[in-house]
Image (cartoon, rainbow, N blue to C red):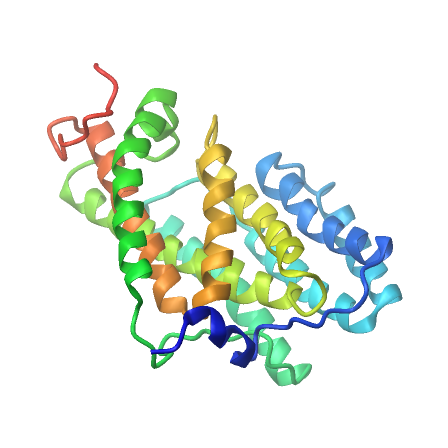
Length: 285
C-alpha cells in the first residue's frame, strides 16, 4: 500500500511549485479571506464587501489568474452572506440554507471548470486507497476528544443557546440532518473550493491559514462563539492538512461527521438533559 504522503505529488489539486510570494499577492488574498471576519464573525455589512472587492481587484492587477481565483472565493462568500447563518430548523430556514450554501459551492465550481477551464476544484470521494492505521486511530482520537471537550464547551459557555429550541422528535431529527448537512458542506466549500483555489498561488501553510480564516468566521456566525475559536481554528487547520495528506474528501468528511455526531448529542442533551446523559465532563446543573 502506498504511503498517503507520497500520493500528494500525483493529485491534480496539489501544487508544490508556487509563484514567488510578494506583499501584494499576500495582501490580495488576505483582504478576500479576511473579509469573512467582517461578513460573518463581526457581521458588518455592507462594509465587509469593501475588502472583498479590493482584494479581488488587487489580485487581478498583480496576477490575472490569482485575481480570478480570488474572485471565485469572494463570490462564494457573497452568496453565503445573502442569508443569516443563525440556526433555523423551520422549512423556510432549511430551504434558505440549502439554496445559499449549495450555490456557494456549485457556482464557483462551474465557473472554474466550464468558463475558466481550470481543474483546481475536485471532490475526490473514491480515491482507490484503503485507510491506513493512523487514519483509523485518528478517528478514535477525534471521538474521544469530542466526547470530553464538547460538553464542557457547549454547556459551560452557554453557546448551546445559539441553536433553536427542540420541540419534539421532529425537531431533533431536523437538527440531526442540519448538523450533518452543514458538516459535509464545510468540507466541500472550505477545503475543496477555497483551499483548492488558494494552493496554486501560495505555500500550503499560508493557503491553509487563509481558508481557516473563512472557515472559522463562518462557524462563529453559525453559533460557535465564546471560546469556540480555540476549537474551530485547530480543527480547520488540521482538516486542511489531512486533506493534503490523504487527498480524500471521504475521509475528511468522516472526521467532520464523527465530530458533529457529538455536537448533535450535546445540543440535544442541553435542551433535554434526560437524553444522551452520557457526558462525564458536562457541568453540574
